[in-house]
Image (cartoon, rainbow, N blue to C red):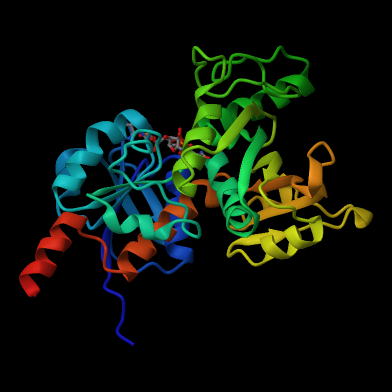
Length: 356
Ligand SMILES: NC(=O)c1ccc[n+]([C@@H]2O[C@H](COP(=O)([O-])OP(=O)(O)OC[C@H]3O[C@@H](n4cnc5c(N)ncnc54)[C@H](OP(=O)(O)O)[C@@H]3O)[C@@H](O)[C@H]2O)c1
């Protein structure tokens, strides 16, 4: 078998929570890298980061920094992605963007590696990584869609502070310390103290009363699953957990399904692990999922409020920084490279026509 071609990879937001995880996941999965460019804001330029024992200097993310880049993994927020992803793509890179900037653009594939990898084929230089809450839900919903059909999904999330970034992790740590030392908690990143609290506000409120985060789960699930009419509702809640998002999910299916069949179905999905033995208190936990790439599902039971055995209730947990962001981005890079889909579809199409 021929060796995979090493690629020049840029990580934008390389000093952040997700960017650091992207660098780690590239190494762990032995992605063939010719050159690794670590990009961030001008504030970090000149700093160096240890990558596998080698110090790599951080550069400012400018359009020119993408010259010669094959794959650009973006994780520096939507404004940076809006400004720089087209610049990177124009210079020949395929962008895998972790922000919300491009996800709902009809011309941009929104992909979970084990759910809709085929959607990557049509990219025109930018590919979007879903929101972390949608990411962990999609493989579970895919399995139900394919086996028994989906009618309606209600999701309530319990999201960790690492989903907001490095400053939010520091804020929770500081508020916990303040409590122990008898100091008042100072909230700067969130509108209320997050330590010892449960805050039902993630991202901005929309006129509908939902938050943007909740609406991302609705719209992104529909796009990824190719079910534009799927009925979805979500309440997104921030909890004082450092890593991993948990979700209480209620699903109404088209045809009946028993919890035992659902367990077998989920266990057969790549990257999904069933942890479901209430008698021994075994169910997915945020602390167990942290640092892992799997999506864990448990507490699978029949929802008696839906007739004919067409309702299931479940608990889904995954590391938001890894599968919810960095790992899926690297998995998309692996698929694009393995299927030789790095160039935009229109350019590949022209080259194929010329070859014929
Ligand atoms: N955390 C998660 O679980 C998660 C999951 C899915 C999606 N996301 C998304 O991923 C993105 C980053 O999240 P994060 O959690 O890693 O945030 P973070 O820890 O706050 O890191 C932000 C990164 O963006 C860089 N950055 C800021 N301003 C920049 C600029 N003007 N030019 C270039 N780089 C700039 C920062 O560089 P400096 O250090 O130089 O400021 C830093 O590397 C966000 O869009 C977020 O919504 C996060």
